[in-house]
Length: 149
Image 1 (cartoon, rainbow, N blue to C red):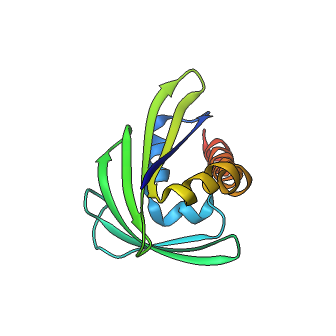
Image 2 (image 1 turned 90 degrees about the horizontal axis):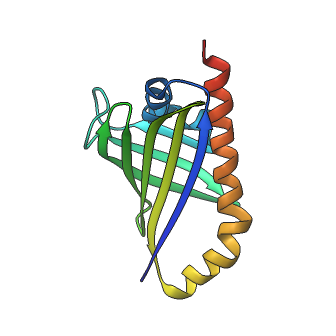
Image 3 (image 1 turned 135 degrees about the horizontal axis):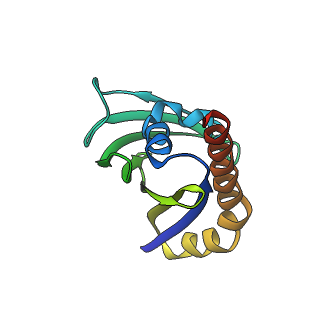
């Protein structure tokens, strides 16, 4: 298996604690990630081991994931594992202060067989995943900056 890691960054003109609160509400991910809906499974406020279920579409295919929060450090770090029944995708968000307000870094890691990994690096990533991720982060930025005082 090959470890795949993709990192995306964006500056957002809003306070880190506000950006964190918005991103940490996983049920709002559909507001900035297209074709995604996330529902809470566990009760109570979000924290480590909180669970969610997501549904979405990518490349004309529906996908469903069980999500478990693995790290919850308000205003600085949030991570979760999304499991589609075949693969686990680790999503790590880091929030830091910057001149613009917040520097958000999103790192996505997963295992893939070497042949599929090569295909992903050469075609799927550049043509589908990377543009989709950049669009989502730009939507997040627009939503946060529109709401910022």
